[in-house]
Amino acid sequence: MQKLVLIRHGESVWNHENRFTGWTDVDLYADGCEQAKCAGQLLKKQGFTFDAGYASVLKRSIKTLHILLEELDHLWIPVIKSWRLNERFYGALQGLNKQEIINKYGIEQVQKWRRDPNEDPPPITKEDDRYPGHDIRYKNLTEVELPLTENLKQTMDRVLPLWNNEIVPVLKNKQKIIICAHGNSLRALVKYLDKLTDEDVTKLEIPTATPLVYELDDELNRLRHYYLQ
Ligand SMILES: O=C(O)[C@H](O)COP(=O)(O)O
Image 1 (tube, protein in one colour):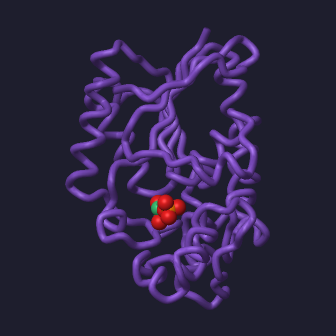
Image 2 (image 1 turned 120 degrees about the horizontal axis):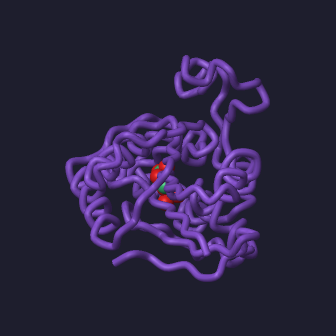
Image 3 (image 1 turned 30 degrees about the vertical axis):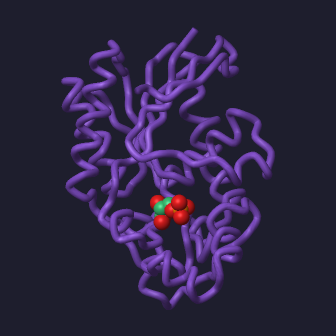
């Protein structure tokens, strides 16, 4: 039996301000740093150790992992950063206040944008400052990989190559890993690992900075999973 830990970043400044974030590189809010510290202490208390960590290329994920590993005295382990773990690209909603968008379009439409796995948020154009093609960190991505918007299925399609090609071999090699990512990139991964239907995943919410432990068999089938409390 092998354990894998998934964790969403701590509360960010835009989580706090209730704004759609997506690929916007927003920092952790002070509370978010504290949450990351607590998650690290919890993992330490329960005897967790890791051989490697995975994060997105967004600072709220990278910093959460760093703070947590510091608590574990594990800053020395390799940390692999991948755009594939980024939050779902929220298109033209990025930066907007969630309540204002609800007031404008109604709760039903906003809930669809947020939770229906097939619903695309309104797209941006390539001229938009928010287009990832303008950001140096994405210079090696192909045009097809650079999103204008993303639904959860598309997020899953770009998370899974990292899972299958890089993370699975590491897990099969009995390495203990922690993946620090985002609400929707983790929902995509959990949908895959738990074989959730489209209907099931609409109800799935992943809390910030709470370690989600998967116990896996040798074939990496899920035996059970639980949040560390
Ligand atoms: O990108 C965001 O705004 C959040 O991280 C996730 O938001 P959601 O819960 O609205 O999908």
